[in-house]
Image 1 (cartoon, one colour):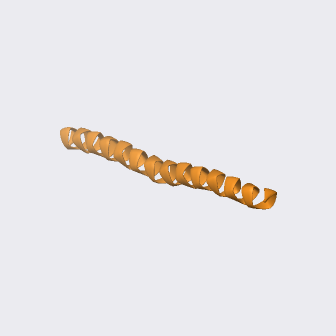
Image 2: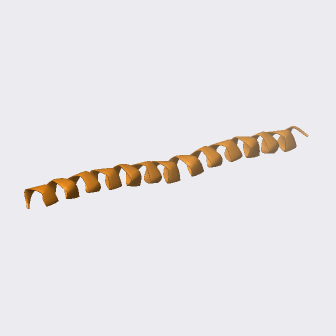
Length: 51
């Protein structure tokens, strides 16, 4: 019983770490893309306004 519980805890910890990495990647990558795309969009809008 004790050995099984310890092995389960180790597995859950590794799974939680992978889930955290995946969640952070899913949140950070679109945010960086939107920020980069938004900055380029603002630049184009400013150029159109100047013209």
